[in-house]
Image 1 (cartoon, rainbow, N blue to C red):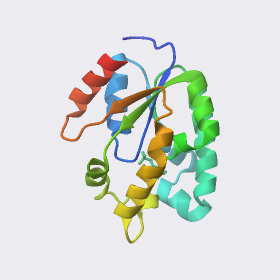
Image 2 (cartoon, rainbow, N blue to C red):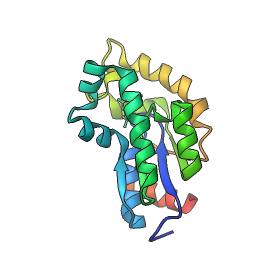
Image 3 (cartoon, rainbow, N blue to C red):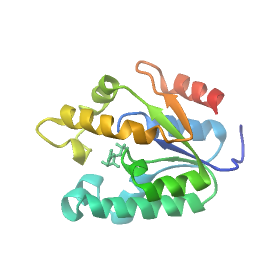
Length: 171
Ligand code: S3P
């Protein structure tokens, strides 16, 4: 599956599932472009995600997220990594499903927590009990993530290279 892709590959899943790192490696191996919707939103706004949440609120961020996804999906097929909440909006699911292979990087709570606990960049986790928030988000979102075209177990302790090889075999 090298060279030109027929359609985009869109990685979905929770914060800490490995969308950005696996997506970057996947795009490199497929010789296609990689974009991260969060980075696109940040560059367009010239602000970090945390600043956007603090200044304009989550609803504003979600609207930007839909706009960015629609724009990216119009471009040359490549690998797109989305923010953890992007797949929760029906409009985004429709956009993505119409033009891309959606892949859910399915990861367990403890692995996610281990990966995100040190990072202060996620506004939804900037609360007094971030693990409880992560637990609730995961329980609420998993049934929706399961609507993706493909599900891929993102395993703890596996290198990005090994996970990407496994993913390439599964596609
Ligand atoms: C979010 C996940 C973040 C970012 C924003 C909201 C979410 O992206 O879009 O903080 O709702 O889960 P990552 O999944 O890349 O951390």
